[in-house]
Amino acid sequence: MAKAKKFGAFGGVFTPSILTLLGVIMYLRLPWIVGQAGLWATLGIIFVAHIISGSTGLSVASIATDKKVETGGTYYIISRSLGLPIGGTLGWALFVGLSFSVSLYLIGFAEVFLGYFGFEVTLTSIRIAGSIILLLVTILTFISTSLAIKTQYIIQKYIAAAIIGNEVI
Image 1 (cartoon, rainbow, N blue to C red):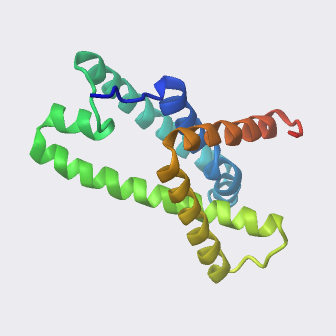
Image 2: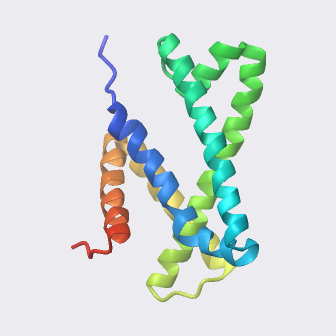
């Protein structure tokens, strides 16, 4: 039996998490939220989100150090800690949440992609570009998950350069 290839804490956990945090939400949606809700309300939203994320992270760390986490990651932890009936229900909620997040990332990427290359940014063009991008990413992942993880490193390099304020060649 062949040993499963693991991506490790950096490639499998840290990089996807950082890309989630510093991607579409930070660059495209945060300025809009500040404009709609105001600075103090936005800071309040961020503060509450940090409290929720911190307590969730501590809970998951407590559960994950208590037992070996096998294939399934978050769902495995939830279903084994709370039991299959409650874990299955929360698994569905996790699936729906991740599906919505993928949609959000595709819409944000399509908006920037179309604007950068001078295409008209309309609802139809965003849908078409997002569908094509989703297909390409799906094909990339089916070809090689390792290649998809390596692609994340390139994206992370560009985001880090944008935060620092340098140009990336």
